[in-house]
Image 1 (cartoon, rainbow, N blue to C red):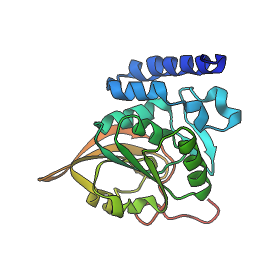
Image 2 (cartoon, rainbow, N blue to C red):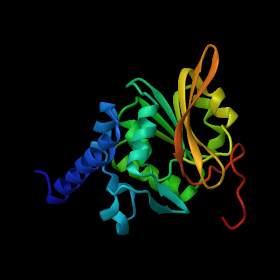
Image 3 (cartoon, rainbow, N blue to C red):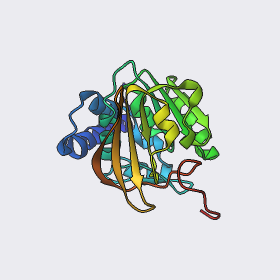
Length: 223
């Protein structure tokens, strides 16, 4: 029997998908189904649970955020995933984006550079039985060479450029979605790789926290 709290959050998810995501043109049914299923309120701190399904990002500690639901849906749809795909995520953060990906793709590899978030999200993935999510504590701008190539790569932080290792680790026919720009605003780029090389398209403006690493922004003391 479903508890009252479960019914409430199920209703919140349905409203989120209908009013924030479908209403803005997201049509991939797999993405919509995934976001109806993943319990977003479990990926934020207890004090923010009642705001978890709002149309905005939320802080998760360590100067990081959980992205606005629509942005998660837009980036996921842009990856054009199939059930057999292997996906690399750069920036685990709260773990919410990885969970949405794991509902669609065969396997998700996610890299996080902040140890406290890495430990916390791994425990949450295990609790929710997302056993098809593999986690790594590392510099995400280097990708995950040992597990490459990937059918899709998603970067959940803003970079000054497209990290070259990620291009190399993208399989032929693969798709990469990444915010690229300065420290304050970026453009969401979609990169497609084929036998002729790289094709790039611009999905529009966005704003993410900085992608820190060897092929991203340098970490500044005190940040």
